[in-house]
Length: 430
Image 1 (cartoon, rainbow, N blue to C red):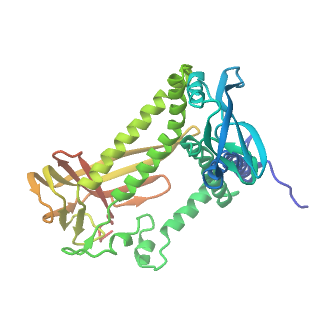
Image 2 (cartoon, rainbow, N blue to C red):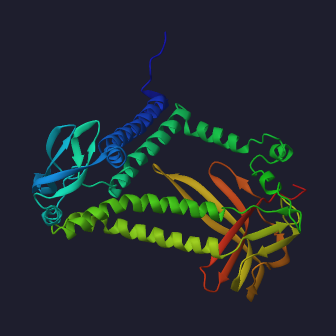
């Protein structure tokens, strides 16, 4: 007989594990709600705020009107707080027909603070003529001021974030539908180990848990055999920090503007003001960190590292070529060979990851020297892997990573550190 959808999966003792299909469906539903909310919110903001504002600035026709009356309109929010907006009654004639409306801007938005709205109303004198702009598709719609309201565009960050989170989550759920965590990890591991050109197939079969070294040997050096790729490109790291900084501060700034306006208009929102202080501090920290990374990236030249052979083997010596460009006064420049161990394990329902440095060897140190523009500092030295060293290793829950690290203490600039991963194989005799 055909089976329906099983709510429970395999029985283990007196306990049944949940169905992976139901779990995937729940995950997909969760992110689908995010996606739906983001799409609806984005459509509402575009239709009610962005599009009317754009049309007022590009399609409305300039005309002349006469001010008949003025007032500060009042409304209340859901909690009973008073909200206000300026309204001006104008009269204008189009095609022989006279129109008389209350208007000011296209948004027709209410906000707290009566005094600011009263100041706007006082700028218009009854009986005088002013410029206005009317909608040619609906002459009964006209405005006295045009322009863009910047907070409207910032509001787009919220629904776009929901769309990105929801869409990414739905894609992830679809790709891992009904698959166990072990199977998903195995698929990911096989994909990361796939070499389309089979350049390292011999070593892959012999050392299945050692990362491939092909990406580290496909760039020949100018002085030695291979130029090592940097672990994380400074430009990409700077871009990632910039995106995080803009995203965080863009959202926070919306609430900051609301809080500041409430104080300027004499009706302070104290709860909102106190609530956003920690988020503002985090945003300032992101800005400071971005500026620091920008200084390091733009002010300090590129660091190049070349090696005589790769991958490395224990109890063997290799030549190393270091090049540091820029216009710098360097207090100290240090090159280190480091080994880092990473272990992941489950503690209850949480997955924890611990990382520690298990080996650290100083390869080179130079103190107190100048680097001139167009004349990079260059030096060759030797590096050796200890005879008893553990080779590089990568599995689902454990990693052994080796890297060469260049650390610089530069006068007038933040200290910097750049890593160059290397692969260590077991001894030739096994």
